Amino acid sequence: MNNIAMNIVAVPDIAGPVENAATENEVLAISEMSELFGVTLRTLRFYEEKGLLHPVRRGARRFYGSRDVGRMRVILQAKKIGLTLAEIRRVIKLVESDTPKTDQYRELQGICQAQQEMLHEQKALLDEQVTEVDDVLTALNKLVAAN
Image 1 (tube, rainbow, N blue to C red):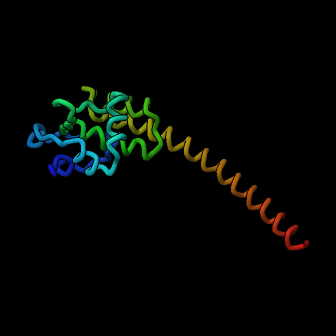
Image 2 (image 1 turned 60 degrees about the vertical axis):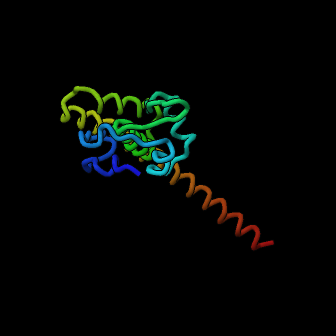
Image 3 (image 1 turned 30 degrees about the horizontal axis):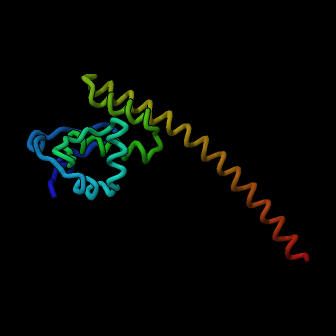
């Protein structure tokens, strides 16, 4: 297997791929890409269909370059924090733009802060639901024990 993803400088994945000229021409077959990221072939085809990955096609085979490897790192971290496909597309567009890195980082920070706020709100609602279910179960347990 190629070392494309291993030669990328360690930054938060969502901050975008850091290109490495030495690996720019290396490619991964779809099976290697799948194995590298622990995703199914179907997942890779889905991201291609949605325009997030752009493998080179040779006949019926797909090959992924360093740009797609970097994009996949961004996609998976963005997905892990709960961003939608539209938001992931926005992040990729941002990190691949000519916008100065400091401005990119500030915009990414804003995206992540908005996501964090939404997740905290969802967590508070879930905590309320868990408490309500706990109370219902306590009452039911008492009823069952009394009969």
